[in-house]
Image (cartoon, rainbow, N blue to C red; front, side, top):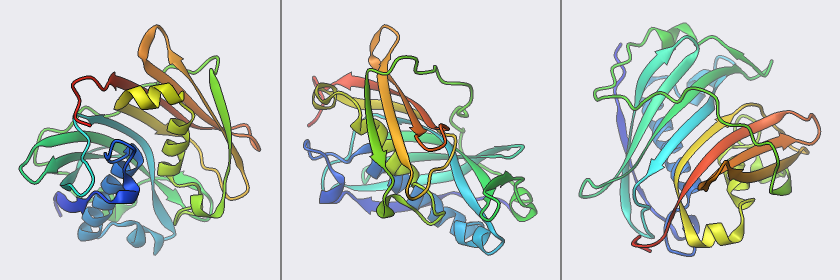
Length: 254
């Protein structure tokens, strides 16, 4: 069987926008995950299909670039497709379009399979690995390599894990991690600049009752780059590592 891509339509809702009236990055990531879910369901390898086998999909990494953010009530289409496979890694790409095919943003992602009982990563099951990956278009560069380490945090916040932070896999949902990372940034940065690029790696899970420490600092001498690190206060494990790149709002639609 060959993989095929899918397309899902969304309308930006009022609870998904910032003070500029534009969709937030966590909202956009949620759209992409919903589109991925729909596409994998069509292919017979959705999270529900895996859960029947005691397995589940886990997002390991996502690299996003936004050219323009959609605004409140704007209709968008998220196209997604399996773009490649390497050992235990499954790659999936996304592109976000307006109704007149303006490309708003694009992303590539890396997915793994986890045993829901043992909470351990496992090999991709045969019914998925047997599927021929046919991207249908040029894949985006795979998200690989290490990110620079955050050495000395400039700002830090503690986030208790509560009931509504937990997803179907019974751990903190990745969009909540992203939100916590961005919320720790300086207020003046959030007010004066806009997130252009994001590279985020999800390294470990946290569960109900944990406390997550979110730290951030500028990256090297580039005033538009910030390094992020989320860790578990209970276990000391590094949960998330990310780098964000920002642009000024001059000449941007707001």
